[in-house]
Every structure is written in structure tokens, then in C-alpha cells.
Length: 117
Image 1 (spheres, one colour):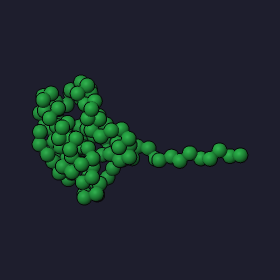
Image 2: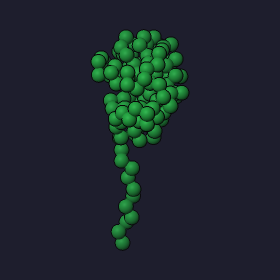
Image 3: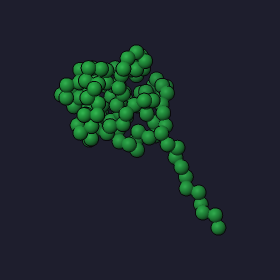
Image 4: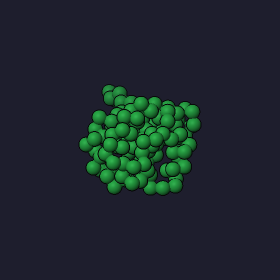
């Protein structure tokens, strides 16, 4: 697998039938993630591979928080026969903080209203 900067990742997403996988845990994913990315936590990735088998010959971009889990995911995907695997360098931290790229927030933090007396 290779690595790709957030800016090149955006270009690749705009160009082709690219799959973006976020390997963080669901609570991290809902706070902010790349638009159209799929959440597949690293620990569950091996059993989820059948769901993305049709992308073996297409670009697959992997994101996590800082890039560490993405590298592990890159190894798993490469071993499984995926041909174009790219880890987004710096993960979501770089995506949001360094490059200021857009993110999607799944759920708003809801505060429980006090019951009315």
C-alpha cells in the first residue's frame, strides 16, 4: 500500500470510483469523518472485507485519527488482494487541522432536557 496526502486524496475521490474507509471506532467516526466514507473499525476489518470485495481493483483510501491504524488496515487490505490501497497521511487530524478540508458530522451532541415539573 502507499500513502497519499489529504489534498491528493480529494483529487482521487473526485476522479474515480474511490472507496474511503475510516478505521476508527464508531464514537470517533460520528464526531467527524470524510464525506462518503464508510466506517469499518480496524478490529472488525477482516470480517468486513467481503462487503468491499468489488473494490479490489479500484482505489481504496484509508483514514483514521493520526495515520497509525490506517497503516495496519493497509496491510490487511493488501494481504487480502486489494491492488490500490492508500493511507491518508496524518489521518483526520491532518485532514481537519492542517488542510482544513470538509468533514461530515453524523449526530449532534444532544443534551437531555430536564423534565418539566
